[in-house]
Length: 326
Image 1: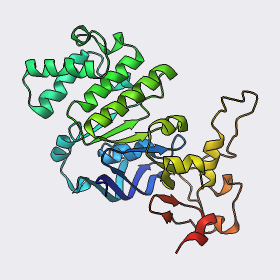
Image 2 (image 1 turned 60 degrees about the vertical axis):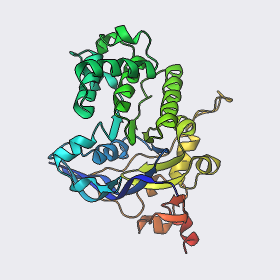
Image 3 (image 1 turned 180 degrees about the vertical axis):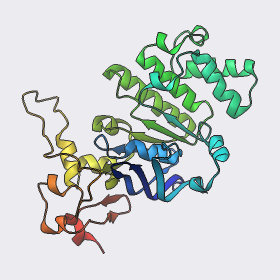
Image 4 (image 1 turned 120 degrees about the horizontal axis):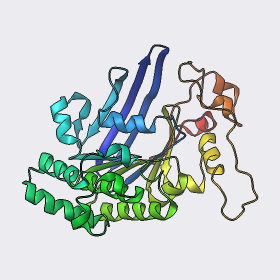
């Protein structure tokens, strides 16, 4: 049996504002095994990034609050740890690659200084040892002339190079879990392919578990082993990546699949999912996707469907599959 590095159970993260409360995550469940890549997909605003910030306990406070649920990392309940204990885990056992490295890297310090800071803080290395290790990390992620590049500032590097620096920082302490929040979105296709190839190589070498967040299904097909599809703060489908692409079950997942451009037929118009994401301030009756669903039934407007487990690796939140339940 594969070992679960991370398990999220019934996670509820709300944002309390003057206009009301937003249920960014409304009872989310998923897990990541050692050496596995879990892809998390969905439209902007579905709760993907909030899930990653909740795991690291970096949800903006006091507006953002983790109201309920469990986050278990290596059999340790993260929500019960003190802030000092969490600091020892962040960047050490759990690392994160953010979507835009230019806003994640400090513009007034060299990339070498920022890499060394991670190694000195978490591994207790001396300045000289940290510098040598930083140069080796830059070489590992494919940055040319690493000995000179260590003295460069973030603004002097291209987007692809900055993202490689972020990956180097993320793997510096050989984390057990790497969270990648849309790390290839701002990159061109060629650099995107290089970054994905690099992440797969690093995972193979270190047996790291990866939680890969994106809205790009083509990237998911390239890197993921399993996929969790999110919509409006809930999980609507979970499947092995091959099963998902062979036959998506949830109407929302089907819509996402049809929305991908067909590279063999440039004249065909892109499919559009009708309607829009429900207003997060308003309470909806029944399924959150009901007004946009082409297969909606009367029960879809009356009761919220449960997450139906069809097989151990296949789950779907839709009344169409209620008859499959035991």
